[in-house]
Length: 211
Image (cartoon, rainbow, N blue to C red):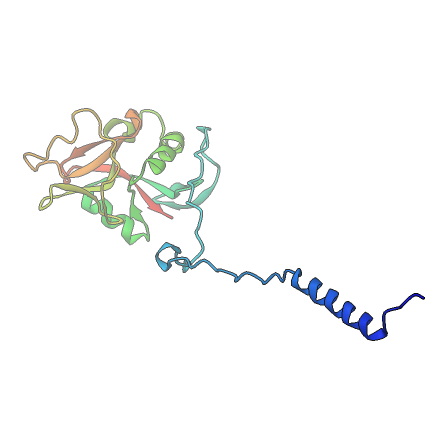
């Protein structure tokens, strides 16, 4: 006669197997999330304004022909506007430096300054065609607004005003700083518009300039 386990025994056996399975179950706990802390000293500050590109000056044209652009007249002579540095009016009446300076101001302009290499290059390229060969500009030069400030022994562009940061002196110039006799600056068109110093009381032609 076969003996079958009772229902009770079957339940007890099932419960024991379940308990045994629970003991072998591995419960994985989530690891804590670690957020790195960056020291404030290593964080660059937010710029107040976006960075800007550096200003690149325009390229001087390579042509030596002056542009056919007029900008009025002065003393019966036509003024010409150069591509980048403004309007230039030749004045062939010979005047002392102070008189030339005042004449330009009286006419709403300024005695020409050559304060940068960029401006000097444009004058060399274009003013040559405005000055007839062998004219008074070639023979004795023309006034600029450059003048010597005695207390600093430095030259200043009086029309701006600005001390010289760019120079284009001829060989042996300036020649009068020691004796304080030559206190004003002229430019020689016949010598590629280089400069020399001269007694301010001498009479020269000049250019009046406006932007």
